[in-house]
Amino acid sequence: MRLGVIDVGSNTVHLLVVDAHRGAQPIPATSHKIELRLSEHVTDDGSIADSGAKALARFVRECLTLAEDQGVEDVMAFATSAVREAPNGQDVLDLVREQTGVSLEVLSGEDEARLTFLAARRWFGWSSGTLAVVDIGGGSLELAAGMDEEPDAAVSLELGAGRLTRDLLPGDPPAADVVGEARREIRKRLAAAVRPISKVGPVDRAVGTSKTMRSLARVAGAAPSSEGPYAARYLELADVTAIVGRLTTMSAQERAELPGVSAGRSRQLLAGALVAEAAMDLLGFERLDICPWALREGIILDRLDQLR
Image 1 (tube, rainbow, N blue to C red):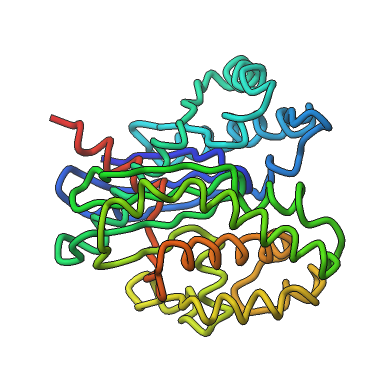
Image 2 (image 1 turned 90 degrees about the vertical axis):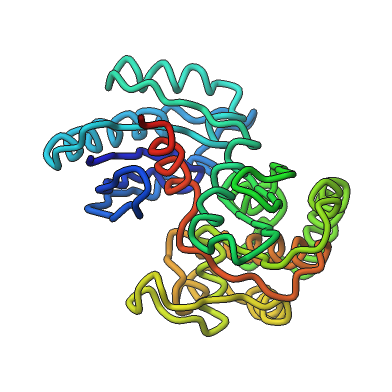
């Protein structure tokens, strides 16, 4: 069957169309996305601005038209931290439903972690043993670990790259003392929350997912996307620390010239690197294997598992 997933993330709104059936690998058919950056498109109280909500509704309509043209049988639509944590999140959901007929499902942070973990488990398989996943989004950070397809521990923290750039890293580039304070704050928040992951026990394979992780790995020398999803990619803690040092003195425009870094996300890359460094250090991960599958694929796999 042909499935469509509309993913309203903190940075990107993305329609992924796949051909899939239960027990088989989902095969991407087409993709359509826009960098809406809802995590930055907010008012002083954290609400999503009217312009952002209206742009979201317009793009969801575009996605529905494309899905119909592509013969999609079932469209799943969900939203993550940007909508979940906005004071006017319900108003945004109502607007999208009124203008498109689509009822966005708002995932909890724990569900984000759980479904991303499912995708990583299916990608790397049972031979990976105890698996840990670090997923850095625009609005939140998800951590999960366990031996099965359901993680034994799943944690979601408001440590997304877009959110932290807005709240902790003003300036282009930010001043050195600002970066130092942001680094300490990120470590403090993480240190208070990683115990459930640590209690799972020794990890056989640590995995990184998300565009931020892929970009950091590419800057560190990983294979470009043109080599396909099966090329082995990884990110080492020593490389992340070196990248933090480089990014601290670079403007957003200069970062956008690095391999694998888009102009739309270049401002957020330093925050993402700081989160990756802190998470890997506090959890004792010297290396993360990069997984091309993440939340969208987890949603699809979960849906296929429910088919009779």
